[in-house]
Length: 109
Image 1 (tube, rainbow, N blue to C red):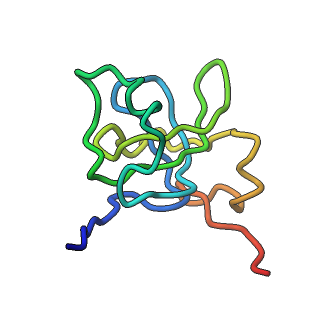
Image 2: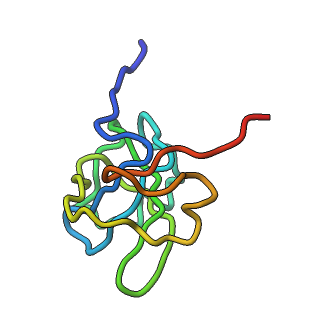
């Protein structure tokens, strides 16, 4: 049986977390959970998301730092602040911020 999922958000889109104070740019999407069991077990059980949904890799930022976040679709919402993200790795993957998103920017070999 093949599981079919559709990602709600797209590469280059700016999202924010529903509960935690950070936002970031989507740079990869897993159709369903694809991380370690240890990572999953570290999430408090009462807020642990289902594995059968898209998970997003974000170049994330908060008031203190920049990092890569791995977040379930149910915990993300579009960021409507209209401002760019200043993660230092953005130029490696994306072009300049325009129309509220980042266009993909990479070279094919």
